[in-house]
Image (tube, helix red, strand yellow):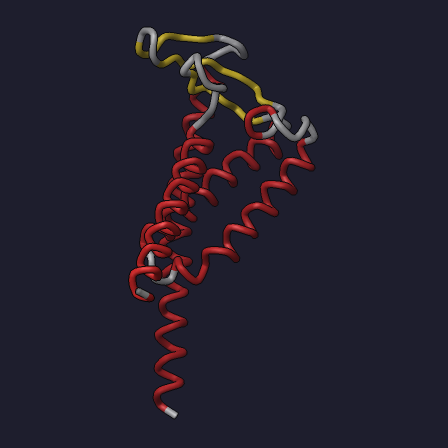
Length: 170
């Protein structure tokens, strides 16, 4: 009887650690995102742009009513529901590997925190505050960056896991 209880206890502790680490990263991303957006809305007029690094990086305040890359229309509630659905898919798809991979925990935290930051904007303003402008890419924000980095980390973790499984089978 001790072995199943010990296994359950270890699994429970592992899932708690996954949730805690993911939550801490998500909160850090959310706070950084909201602080930077607050700074932009307090110091820029919509459409205003300032040079940060000449010919490379600008701060440009954009009120983005559309979804990622201008897709999915400009219906805030639809975009919020889509974001929540994607978060649920990511969570259920990666929660088991997250118990064994700090990289996946970090990735999920970045994705959750970034999505929460953009959802908060849509609830508060009916648009997302974007401001990082490279001039050759759509203007984006800290949340978008963390979501993108999180997805890239999930790809790396998945490829590494698949490679390890393939090696163990050969």
